[in-house]
Structure formats: structure tokens, C-alpha cells
Image (tube, one colour):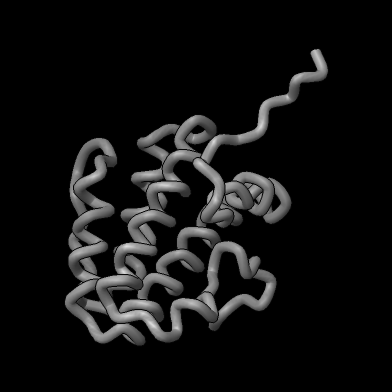
Length: 141
């Protein structure tokens, strides 16, 4: 069941994606996952991002058995490129649906650990394609 409170910034199918082929959808997914990693790894570590990402893949594999398999060890860029390659081989609609489900699942897992408000605050920079993934620093001190 999809959770309607999931922010559109994390679990979305962009209007501009509608006309894209699977390769373009896969490229956009790769960029989004790299931004998520860049935003969250300073807070929960690469291991935390990896654990949530891998758990999300595991939970979705029954519906999307073609998603990449679980790996052991630290999260590396190869994992996101494996997702990109898997998405690029599917019809565009399947690729969009799987990536959207993966983002929702990841968001829901993170939300269950740290709460909705903090999850949304942390993931907001990752949802902005113009953002370089940097979290704004407090310069008031």
C-alpha cells in the first residue's frame, strides 16, 4: 500500500520523465541516488545508507526480480550503476515504477528509524536536481 504522506520530492514520477526512454530514466535515477547518498552519508554514514538501500532492494525484489542483488560490505558507486543498468534494460514505465517504489521504500525505512520530519528535512536537498547534495550549514555562530 502506498503511503500518501510520502513527499513528492522523494517518491515521484516527474512530468518531464513521461517522454523519456528507459536509459534516460535510469540516468536520472543514478543521479538521484547519488544525491541521496551525498546528503545522508554525513549523517548516518555510508554504511547506514548502504543498509537502507540494500534492504529496500530486498523488499522490492519479489515485485521486481530483475533489480540488482544484495552485496556485502561498504556502499560504493558500483551499486548505483548496477541499478542504472538494470533500469535501462526495462521498458521506461517499468523503470520509473521500480525506481519510484525503491525511493518510497527507502524513505519509509528511514522514516521508521528517525521520524517523518527529520527524514523530509534530510532528503529535501537530495530532491533538488540543481543541488549538489550539500546540506546548508548554519553560519550564525
